[in-house]
Image 1 (cartoon, rainbow, N blue to C red):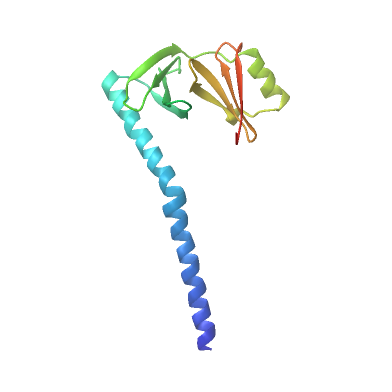
Image 2 (cartoon, rainbow, N blue to C red):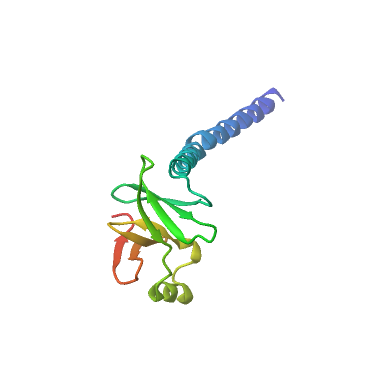
Length: 148
């Protein structure tokens, strides 16, 4: 009976260690990045007196770039860096026809598309097997295979 109780206690202790490790080593860094993103976004909003701004995403290629909507109807996009300096303000681009074709064909989903910066503003198409950058006019496409 005592060995059964000891085995149950060891199993409980092992499960507790696994759960703690998941929270500390897996979700902990992700929460830290999200908190840093929010803090930097608030700094940009206050520094530039932005109204109706909404954080879109963080994009990493050659450098870390942050993207946010500005305006009540999301009519502008701002791009800023890790120092909170806005380096580009553009009108929110309409999706190019080639991107809409990819969506309607089912090759990509709505959640696979976001904004980024690759020498100029781009649509970032991030799927399981590829990373694709399409400039906001839909003319230039850069393919990057994941894992290479």
